[in-house]
Every structure is written in structure tokens, then in C-alpha cells.
Length: 418
Picture 1 (cartoon, rainbow, N blue to C red):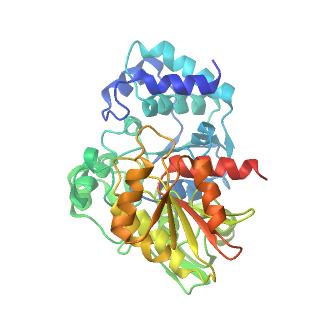
Picture 2 (tube, rainbow, N blue to C red; picture 1 turned 60 degrees about the vertical axis):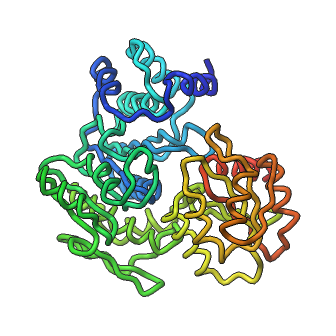
């Protein structure tokens, strides 16, 4: 089967799209016994995981190690999820891994994410990866990635998201994220807001917790930044290419992670600047100038929307902002709209490219009621883009946000117009 058929079939394999637990993955991994890389990083957290993985992979790419990245979800194509030395895995490599998983599965009802996680490990083994950076999909304790033993871990931050699965408050969600901790191994926490359960869990398992503020830190004059680690200090660093002050939290944590893992040779100003300053990721405050000015960001929870709003507020633009919004049915619509409302002049609601999408009409009603502003309804993503282009003048920008399942299709449309 071509990769597209495999992916469609994987969506039907498990009776539940999300089915947290390690037993199924452990049984299949035991049958396959894939060789694991010499060093394994786990990256968990609510927001900033993709950015942190991108920075970590870029800087590790300056070493002699062969580096594999596993991330999710993808923005425009599945191959983004599995990369080695900066190159996406080919369809053929992914299909070969899927075929091996299928032989070993023995009727285990693996979810889409579990199947892909095991396949990524097989690709890494086949390509003889030295270092693997594995992004946790949801939570940590029961996520498929946690079936693989890490050498060092990063938790980016904790905010309310996936509450139906992880818990109703910050402390409960933090405890799930803390499930990636291991005894006597470093765990880096990249936020100044340290939940009590993170601290308690680190003490309970005897993990080596390093937190932003007390154990490492950064400072900036607005044009450059400095980093202070446990044994290293770096000054006069270029600001990261990924926009937003929150990216300095992520960048500082990545450096602390590498210091804790013993990659001291990479803690050099020139290497950090080469790796971070030019880094761009699809769907993270990504700008595309086509017939209109487009800004695409996958913010899908209140904390991510607040970071997006801060970036919008820091801009000095003469024109207005037209926002195309789509969200899934387990997301906090009002929590996302609230931070953005003062920065958006026109709203357009549309269904995301997912069966879990909120219907456009229902989303428009909730946006209008909460923001006290009108919200247009579009029957498709293509129509939403056309309506936004009609509303936007040459000085305006079109913001696309709320879901990976909206940003990805819009990016594909924009790329096809180039």
C-alpha cells in the first residue's frame, strides 16, 4: 500500500483515537527488540515541545552524532514526524517500518500514535541513529513514548489542555507530565511556574530536577540574550529565529538539557547562534507573503493563544487582522478567543480537517458570543481563505490559528500557489 493508504488504515485500527497506556506498546516492542540509540531525550509539556525539539535537534546536528527526531502531530505531511539529520524519512522507509510493526503486532489494537511511535524507533535503528529526540504526544506517564527509557528529559511548561485525559487542574496535569522522570537522571523544567507536583515527583523518584530560575536562567536586552547554566555561561547570543519571548525559555532549557546530558562541546556562542538564530518551523508564528500577508500559528489552548497574543501585541502594524479559526471539540474555545479578541478585527470560523472538529456554525456562535464581535461562517477551508482575502487590504494580515488541522491545509494551499 502507498503511505496514504497505510495512514488511513491506521486510523481504523483502534476503537479509540486516544487510549493511554503502555502495555500494548511494551508487548510489541518486546517482540521487535529494536536497538535503541546511545542517547535518548524525552520532551514533554503543554506548549513549546515542537520548538524545543527543533532547537535541540539543530544544535545536536552540529555534533558528530547521527540525530533522529520524532514529533507529532505533523503540519502538512506525515513524514515530518520522523527525521534523521534534518531529512524527513521517505515513504519507503516508513512503509517498511509499518510492515515490521504489523508482523509483530499480533492483533494488538495499537492507536495511530502508538503505531507511529514504534515505527519511528525502527527507522532510527535502521539508519543507525546515535541520538533520538522523542516528543511525548500527550501527558507523559502513559504516553507511548514513555515506553522507551530516556537518558535525560525536558518538560517545557504546564497549562490546561487535554483535561479530559490528564486532569482538571495544573497540578494534576503536571503529575502526568512528571511520569517521564527517571531515578538519578536529569529532568529540566522550562518554566518559572513550577507546579508542586513536579517538585514532589522529582523528590519521590530521586530525579535530578533543574528548573528555570533557580538552576539555570537567561536575560536579554531586546537585541541579544545571555544564558547562565550550572557550569557554563554564554553571553551576546543572537535572539532565536522563532518569534516570541517565550522562545527564550525554550532555548535556555535546551541548553540546560545539553549541559545535563554532557554535550559540553556544543555550548559555544557560535554554534548556538548558527543553530537557533535561523531556525524556522512550520506553523509557529510563520509568515508567508503571497497575495496577502499570512501569519500561521498552531495555538490551540489558552496558554498558546496568550503567547500568540503577546507576539501580535509586540508588532507595529498599520493594518487590521482577519482571523480564520478552527478548533477541535475538546478544546477551550473561549480560552483561546479571549487573549486574541483585542487583536482581531474580523473573525471567520471554519471546520478543521478532522472528525473531531467543532462545526463552523457552532464555533462562530461561541466566538461571537464571547468576543461580542461578528464571526463569519465558511463551509470549507478554501472558502474561508477566499473570504479572508476579500476582507484583507494590502496593509492587513490574515491570521490562521486554533488547530494543526487548519494550519496544515492552509499551508498546503499557500505552497501550491507559489
